[in-house]
Image (cartoon, rainbow, N blue to C red; front, side):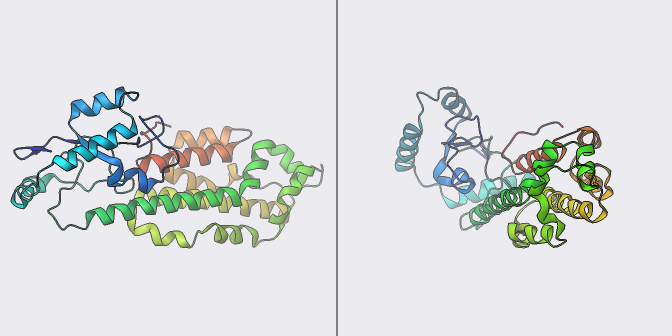
Length: 291
């Protein structure tokens, strides 16, 4: 949608792009959500109208509007497409490095305009798939290391230390006995798919990859610290571990890290929540949040 050499259209999601947006469907995958079948081009005015009146503009109605529009559309001459692309070339930035097309104004500040025959759509879909793959790996890490997070959520540091030193028997700690084995944390990281994640690195931003790396490393290191606790017969607290400190500060602001260390319980869970929010924000799935 262009007036002379200026693109004025807005790409709208038929089913909303994120939780809380109009017509959001939690059952959609990231690929489906940002696929062209779920997108419709609108002028800025109608984009606002349809999102403010979800009752009138249902998914079914928007799909019909899209079908009617495409049926009545006329082919744009290739020279016009190329002319617009060339006029914007100096101000273009690649769209959706990690999150696909968002429903924002289509102009040179946020979208790459390509002449016919470009492979950008295929690349964009691969980028979306990479984000989804990394997120699924993080879900597996969460499952594999769930008991590490659980005991940190339930027990205080002094209770943990009393158990590891033999001063107090806590039956709850039986849930982490497998960490007596030095290979447990490494085996869990491998099972979660940590090695396969490297295949997705070329398709995501450096920032997104760094956040992913920090999250998986936090899981692995806190698991290894429990192994050391069994070995040393004292609780090796992640709060005083320089490795955990460096990892967290690589992705979170200093004041957030200090806040996490001050928590008596649930520090690991809260840290992971912060990091996952950063991951989703970088992927374009959430608005930027201040920590």
